[in-house]
Image (tube, rainbow, N blue to C red):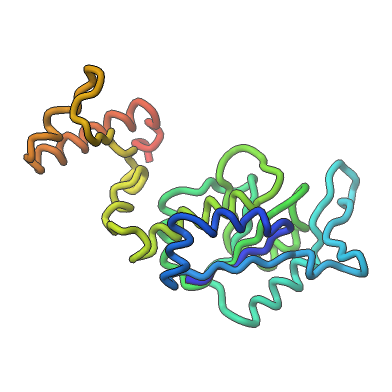
Length: 225
């Protein structure tokens, strides 16, 4: 998979992609992530990328020209399965969306900033808009990092145990069941006996029951879905 990310502050994204699972995925050549500084496509001697919004109002807006020029240049190199805009006024990222995007070959992610981007960019280029929650961040860089993490870990070969991702929360509209490790008893707190029994059908039954119980208590809306 190849992922291009357009950002006003690309340095914010370097650390998340230089550590842990995403770094290992890049080292294995399972994914390539390239960061593109929007300011390199800025207008004039001062590399302007934002301007006041028509109609008045507080906050600056990312201009259409720099973004359009950057996207057009990238589209000359490859065809994108999706061109994604990270914005709070969009559908919230779900595991289902992450699963679908993990099958893509080429993705382009545009991160918002200030009051957002000129609407014409969204109308002309964007094929999918994603939010990571009902709140506003300073910019879309951290949201893009979250999206990439959710996608990359699903690519075959990235995780040591490929079945691990299949048992994550939300994969079957259930939260994950409780998990335990050694010691079997600590300060009077014991691991459930069924997990020590070696009876794997019973263990799976217990895990399913616990997953349903936790989902009903914490996220009943998932059961409605």
